[in-house]
Amino acid sequence: MKIRVATYNIHKGVSSIRSTPRVLALKKAIAQFDADVVFLQEVQGKHDRNSAKFGDESRGHRHWPERAQHEYFAGDSHHSAYGMNAVYDHGHHGNALLSAYPIGGTHNHDVSDHAYEQRGILHCILDTPECQVHCYVVHLGLFESGRGRQTQALIDCVKASAPNGEPVIIAGDFNDWRNNLSDKLRSELGVVEVFDELGARSRLGDLVRSFSGREKPVTPARTFPAALPFFRLDRIYVRGFKVDAAEVLHGTLWAKLSDHAPIVANLKLA
Image (cartoon, one colour):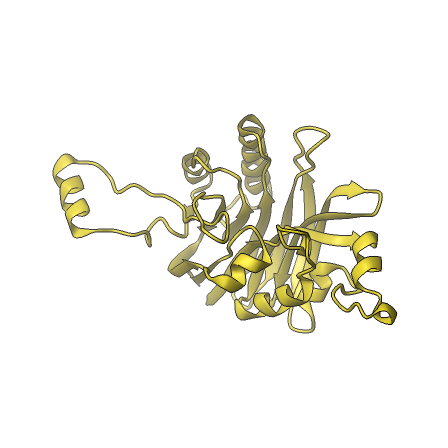
């Protein structure tokens, strides 16, 4: 069984400069992933101010849908689930999953490290034709110490909910720009990051490493900022899958839609 997956921090459906509404364009862009499963972060389940400002057709505005963003993006082709994390007076946002497969169960785990930064892990169980697949949508905090605790919470969550080596996909915005968390996730959960085996390699580099006894360094892809990606913030980790292909989507379109660039990957059930 083959599954195409994507992860994308959509910046609440507005551009990073001047907060221009991008929800309609995002729906078309997400459709271009042609993905069976899409992991989304910073999804607004409700935003009364933007709905009033950009969604009033009587005033000529048609840039903000009436439905929650995850429902709007899912349309008729995908199922959707939403985990509300941050709540404010005019709405709320969190993580979401879009799935071409039925979603058999969901649970949102609160991993907020302090009152000023609400974070969660959305766990969804997909009923695929072959087996159940556990998906975890992740958005970790901005502070390194908090990310360490949130990573441990993720590990505990996966061990408790998928304890017998079931297929797992963990994806999202890890904010782990120094790549401090990957080794722990690999060792504790038996996962690999999709670029582990697909990263750039050179024959000379491989030859030097073979003589020195050093392993090939594994580094995630650069995804932030979308206009000129430098930081390695977004990841897709898998267990029970072979990674056939993975890429970061670059270009003018993606630079306009969000401050993060999306990652797409083709997986095959091992």
